[in-house]
Amino acid sequence: MSNEELRKNVTDELFWDPKIDSASVAVGTDGGTVTLRGTVGSFREKRAAKKAAERVYGVTGVENELSGRLMTGDARSDADVRGDVLQALMLDTLVPSTIDAKVNDGEVTLTGEAEFKFQLDEALDVAGNIRGVINVWDEVAIVGPPPAAGDVKDAISNAFDRSAKLDADALTVESSNGTVTVKGTVQSWAEHDEAIDAAWAAPGVRNVHDRILVLY
Image 1 (tube, rainbow, N blue to C red):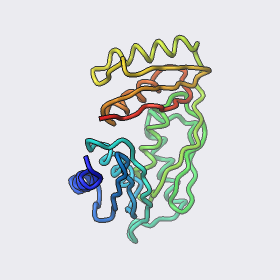
Image 2: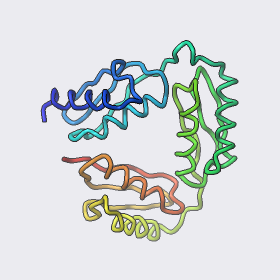
Image 3: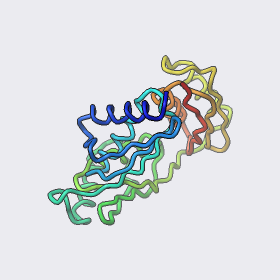
């Protein structure tokens, strides 16, 4: 697929997604790598644009350079935004009380600790959905106790084998002191995300190094 064909397909997918103001997003392509530039109205929209680009066949990587700028009616004080973020985090039963948030010019930074990656992911989603948030940064430490390396490797490999979305033979897993490295090739971003999610789901994993290539 040529760069122009890929650019058109990504542009069409952005237009197709009602969560995105596609007129605000410029798309560049270089091989299979897509670069998104422009200004959008929220962190949610920035994240949705990246997901839309990753859905397109032929995309092997997305450089999300979109910046956020609030519409006049959405501008709020940092104190108000922080109050709403903290309230939303507190009401979500998946988010531990050890995660805190600070806000500067509409940009939220999450701090503290979480035992599992899914708890951090939930906090990122919750914070990103608050009106007035233009970006979310992660400074949360994953602190679950690291299990034996062999246990992690076997558990993740078995999860790959169980998944109907993955070609387990194309992936390898290495583990050391709670850090997991996943290598290999997949045929789509959906398959890539499935593999990374499976690696993070293993008990005691504190960090995942993504060495997966998306090949078509």
